[in-house]
Length: 157
Image 1: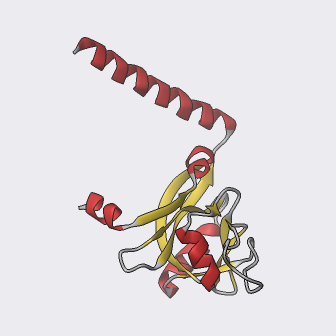
Image 2: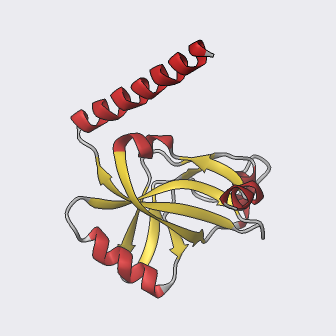
């Protein structure tokens, strides 16, 4: 069932660095307010989520430092590539995020941008806690151990 839902979504960009640098505790889906040429750039997959984050300000959620390149066939009406973009969430979700982000060490990180089956641009936000250097090493060690187990199983067959 979850696979069918992912097949219907056209993933534009993923933030692989987020899974490396943070423990993702919870995920939220949010709409994003875009201008016309930004949508065209998203369809061309010209977006960078590295170093971007989201925050709650005055009861609204905003996406900061998300770089959407100007549309190549745009004119003088092109958008600012790194402008702050408003995210669309329900009030209950915003209140929940506000409470969680005020806790020590929790932040909102965009995990991926995609188009829904209805053609709407969506952002998947992760409520994340930062990893320490030793946590990253442990993650790498566990991943490599899993790969060695997989290789050993294949060699036996």
